[in-house]
Length: 296
Image 1: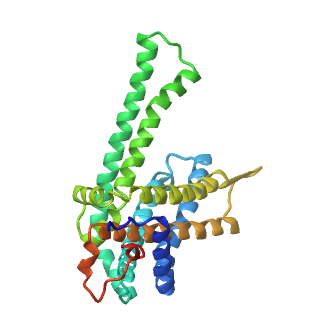
Image 2: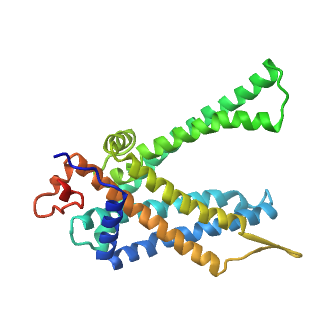
Image 3: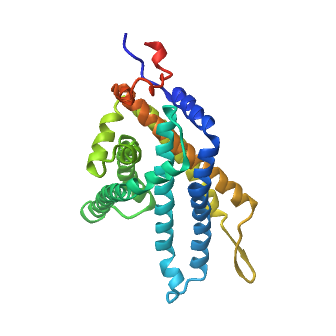
């Protein structure tokens, strides 16, 4: 009988099981890497708005703030991703977890993650550039060749013609490459090879990957968006940067979402390998029966 493909509920079950089995370990990793990352993301939006209202071109703080933000986010996100992914993978097979081994995985994964992320950013940059150029051509074609007058409706129509296909292409590629970070950490391959590997493994599981992408993308996006619009309060004497208990709660929730996003993607990677029979490579004593194996 054909083995049914795992679904989002099986993935949630395994995610909960792994986290529940090692709460202190994952709490420590989240506190070291993801919590500072979340705090800094929200703090950066406030600092960015502050520099907007008090912009001084000669101030080096204003010039280097985006660079500092990029370096901080890159460092903590890569470290958190490497250590948590490594821990989840071995925790799934009931192997003992220790903090030192999880931290050591950072040294072997950091630069491959950096190189692969650079490749991904370049690909999405050229995709955005292509569709932006296409939008420019539509506007020029309509106004110069067809004689259509520039109006809000015409611009919105052209934007819809371009942005909807761009959104579809972007989401499609993000789903195909959703396993890339886990593959870089666990299989020691990077760059285009990791992209090809993810595209191959994710076949048959795109629905689950899309669900995770929409769920965590929406949750994290709403938190960041809400923080941006409420980040700076004006006063008669100038701009006040406030960081209150609401921001602390937002940071905690963002930490939780980032953590479970990483755990769920790693479990998805394990499920995708199981679809191709690759989970047997762990060996008999380490093999953990998957929740969908009962239906065989």
